[in-house]
Image (cartoon, rainbow, N blue to C red; front, side, top):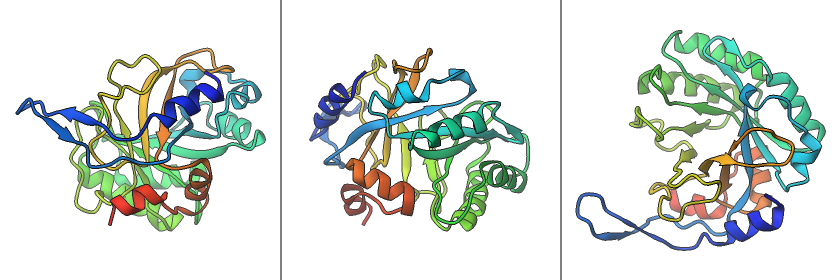
Length: 243
């Protein structure tokens, strides 16, 4: 997908309705971010070797990159991180959380492996059959936040578990909602909660990557995306919704 197509899709985010599954009535969505930008994907070892220059030419500006899972390092973490940085792309490291090891161990391993420091963005991926309880996620998030001096980006909602603690609720969200999952945003399956990133597909085709890839909309402009990555400042639409 080229950058013009991405911008056309992004420009379609205005106001929408969803059908309430219990009452079969239409309900206005509470969050309608304007503008949005469609320049973010996430990758791990599953994508194999990536041609970062070719991928950047499609208009991608930001990449979520898997760094760890429990006490295991993603086999392509450093390769992917360095390849993205060499192209001037924004990098957000993430960890896939597990119940197999303690919160302190997971947090420390992620912090050390990803080289987290004050001001850096970082994401916690909470999903799957081996997902820990919300209390564990909270403890990992607190440890990461202490290092980066900002809230972590929280990913949950594609499958159980999906009930955060009270402390986790204000974290900026990276919310998965696929719908038809054909590589384009499904306007009938948008998140009902305010989101920083909406992961709208796991089937995006991108030049430079030989496998399908997850793609996400950001709830702000490209300049606001850069600002959030660098400082943690929320885009204007999301900041207003979080008050």
